[in-house]
Image (cartoon, one colour):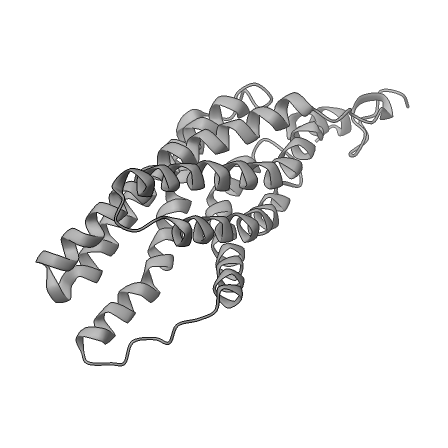
Length: 244
C-alpha cells in the first residue's frame, strides 16, 4: 500500500530529510526571544537587587521574588511569540494565543518554584539563621544543571498540551525541555558569575549576551526534537489514512 503513511518515514514510506532551515530559525528565535525576555529579567534584576536591599530590609526577598516572577512571565510571553513565528509555518493550525498562553503559564510556574529557595534563605537570614556556606563552582554549576532538568519539564508541559493537538508523540517535548535546560541553566549561572561588579554597562552587556547564548543553546537542543515531531504525520493525516 504505497499510499499508507508510515509513522517514521512520512508519505509513501520515504524518510523525511532533516530540515536545517526550520532548526536554524528555531535556534535564532529562541536566542532572540531570551535576549529580550531573559535579558530584561537580568537587567531589571540587577537594578532591583540594590534598590530592595537598601530600602526594603527584611521584605527584600519577597518583593524581589514577586517582581522576578512577573518578569519571568513576561519572558515566557516574548519567547512564546518568537517560537510561534517559526511554528506557524509547519503547524498552521496552532494558534498564536494558545502557544503564547502555554509559554507564559510554564514560565510563571517555573519562576515561582525557582524563586522559593532564595526567598526562604532571605527570610532565614532575617530570623538570624547562619548564611549558607559558599559552594564550589563545580557544585554550583551541577546544581544549576539539576535545576534546569527539573524546571525544563515545568516549562514544557503547558506547551506539550498545546502541541499534542497537532503532532503525534508530542510527549517527547517534555524530556526535550529537561535536557535543553539542563544545558542552558549552567550558562545562565556562568554569565551571572562572570559579570564584573560595579560597572553597570558591563553588567547589562554580560546579562544580555548570556541570555541570548542560553536561549540559542536551549533552542538548539529541543529544536532537534521539534524538527522530528513536525516531520511526523499530523493527527489529521493519520486519521484520514486509517479511517479514524
